Image (cartoon, rainbow, N blue to C red):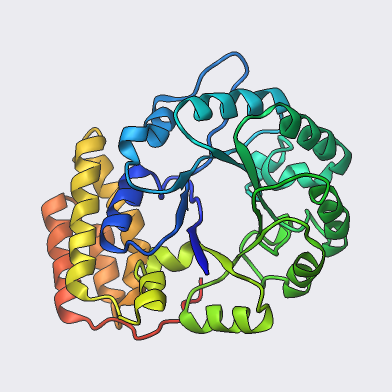
Length: 318
């Protein structure tokens, strides 16, 4: 079984990846938040720093690219190859309206003929291997068979299927019938992504799809960073480890961000996920949100971890 950490914009950058890998080293791969090639321009400082080899030492990282321009994808892949990356991931899953209206991310799925031509060119002209992360369509599951037919034409390193429509965003349940079609028909290695929040959900999925030997987790790992660690080792995460992980994140952001306010904003965002692993933490969550300084914030977090037990085997609803 291979476990992969989903890319999450604004969250799973190199500071997070390094801290997570240090304290919960069971992930086989981390995918970067998407990079966006721009016509006639390079990448932003933030994007360049996120994929810099010196910021990802000892971690298996796959950069993700968001574009509907074959030329832009090939240019990005060439640059990433020069940095030492041997695989690049194509984002066909982002459901954000600002992305979709530009025919990018899941929005590209509404134009199968254009997508086919795009894939034809990038597989002919790109050096690194290409993996694809996709949804099953825009508005109707009946779109997926045609998309799968297109994907089967190309030597995709890994086809990561989040079996929701763009219109679903993260609502409703994943469409396991669509994933069953992929399991039967895909000619490429297949990875499942979507709502893996607990050991039980992973067990249920693997029982239904015995050949599913690649799982991608995202939100479940933000709420419970040791979810895969427990699956591999049988050990529950300890509060001391979670606190050390939290402190490593805080120190990392303090080095990278411009001031206390930015660090505080970033840590509150991450803590809004992590707090779900603690029982009876509603009041603590309010205190953390209201914290005006890092010292006040740290005191709130320490109080949370000292006074609330971890939820045992949470099946977290988002």
